[in-house]
Image (cartoon, rainbow, N blue to C red; front, side, top):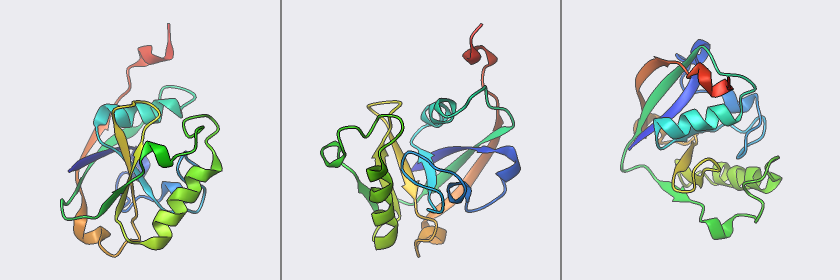
Length: 152
């Protein structure tokens, strides 16, 4: 399965990515090492835009592949708190991720996106023993965001 991530150009050659160690996200807090990915390029773009104060520049699209043998678990909507999609995100989401990371039973956690009710993001555990065997970076493309997204 292909997964997509939009990364700052200066970190494009870092592998595995370490951004989550230095910033909070909907599904993690500073110090929790996960790699946020999306099931499509368009969803990855949406996820970046929702967290940006201005049109992002100096970004690359990272295309990854996760082997079909990799263990992926899912968080069903009925196991999420009622306010899971609100901002700021509830701390309970980071607790779900922390449990996922600590158990090390699965390489990836499929989570719903607040940007699209029919698409999903995948949190990868780079510390999982199978990460190097089942996840690889297969492409890197410089990308731009349409300046008209910032309004007229």
